[in-house]
Image (spheres, rainbow, N blue to C red):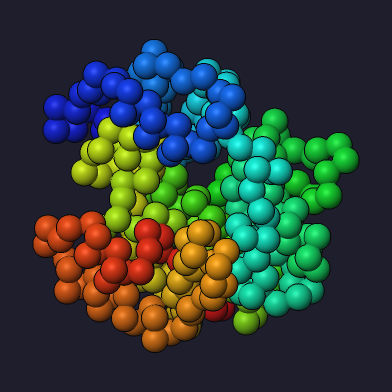
Length: 306
């Protein structure tokens, strides 16, 4: 079982460079003050929470998840100081989902966070239910334009009626699940979908990570609350075992690129190409710039068809 203490894991001295990477990694607004003590507190807290999450058992895992994430945001209130919605262009950030999700589709987003994507989809003719793991973050919100439901993120069909949705959607969620629960998560997504429905998901690619707090410290792999990062092949296998048929990979350029040249690649051919590249690269030590060129981007982004 992985723990935060693996490989004599130690948090390094917090330097100005680490603080700069921390601010960038969490998209903190310029008005938010970040000190070395704040970064140290965050790292020590995640180190403890990661060990608790990894060592949790199926019968208490939901309670551990709720407690851990509640504590994370309660003890680190500055994480709420990200750039405000007005600081980003929602069309640039989210419009590619309008190409992936047909108009009129009923959508449920797993792990909606602040709910920005769910609201965007609902406002663009794709009514979306937003979800989170606790009543505090996932309960009904007064005046909100989307409907909020609670889910544990794993046993999805225990919280929702089966065959109810055209699309299940998750962005940057699967990496937070206990690795033992990922297969059950895919099965739950499959059960929520109508025949022919889509599970659209993205998650950091293990070859191009880590993408959690570990990135701030330039670690070689995820050591904090990204409990596991994946390849296309790994998650494609999980999707097929859950009952999904066709798999299509998606490539969306970074925002600065698509601001000037909006385009997107998607298809079964792209999924096949990426899984072949993953197999060829394997455990070889390949420089990150070459990996990015071969794999296009930093995410596993897949559409699984029921």
